[in-house]
Image 1 (cartoon, rainbow, N blue to C red):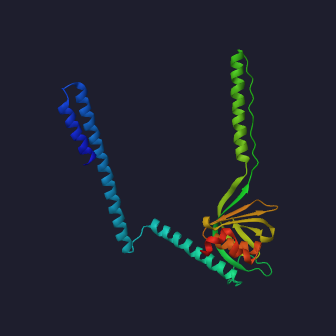
Image 2: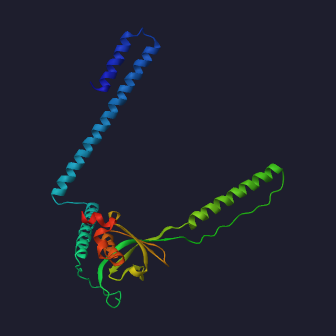
Length: 264
């Protein structure tokens, strides 16, 4: 039996059993009101479910007819792009594991070094792990009058200085900064990033640690004399495979734990 009907029956039963007192009347009114709320809530859930079903059906018919919104087209293009780059990274891992060199790509603006071959040219997210210099000003004050007034003024002044000092410490703390989208070139010698028209070089020989998180589409590289580098995006798993090859050797391409998901 639906809850609303049960509540109405209970309210009627209470009304019949009551002696006509105000308490019984209030209880009957409360139960009736509660049943009404339950009925309205159930109606809202029913209508919202019906709207979702109709919307889903309309979208399915629209997709079958080949009609997509601009947002849906962009989402599909992004999804297909990620899938294509993931398959490319898997194929690259298999090729390098079997000692097969992939075909290089032409790059006309960046000048290649002797013997340098480029394999990836794509836009990715970029960040560096750095701190920054922060200055803050301590405020002073001269307080004259009742001792309680002077003490309160000094306390407020000290609290303000503490807040400013704490904010400055947080701002100066090291974390990922300089976020942006850059063009990434991956060669057999280095990672090359075009940042606002300025090329930055990250040589494999200068790397002291490499963290390829391909499941998160991310690669982090550490250096002896430069801030750590973070790259993220669809092309990064393939870039990570080449980076691991050039920093850890050909056996690591298949054995590195963070690249295991590419082999599955």
